[in-house]
Amino acid sequence: MMTVMTIGLLSVPALFLTLVALLTGVGQYRRSHNLPLSIAAAVLFPAFWIAWYVRDDLGVGRA
Image (cartoon, rainbow, N blue to C red; front, top):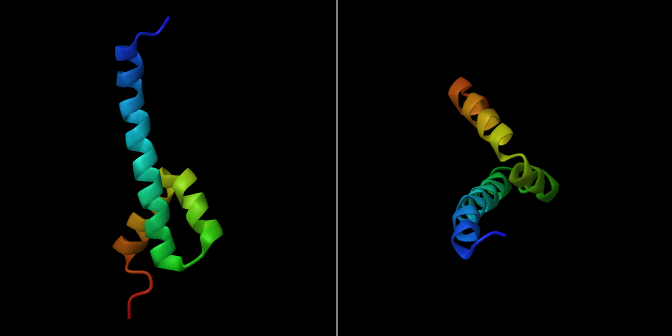
């Protein structure tokens, strides 16, 4: 049986990952104004971070 302390310790990383995922979805929405893409970004946030890094590093979309 899990104790209250164990549940508390396990919930902190889960809450952190949820917050990061939500912020990633909001960031994608600000970039694209595309709701389905924003939802995908929230679910697959590590992949979207890599895509943003590569895009920004290569200067895609800059004049």
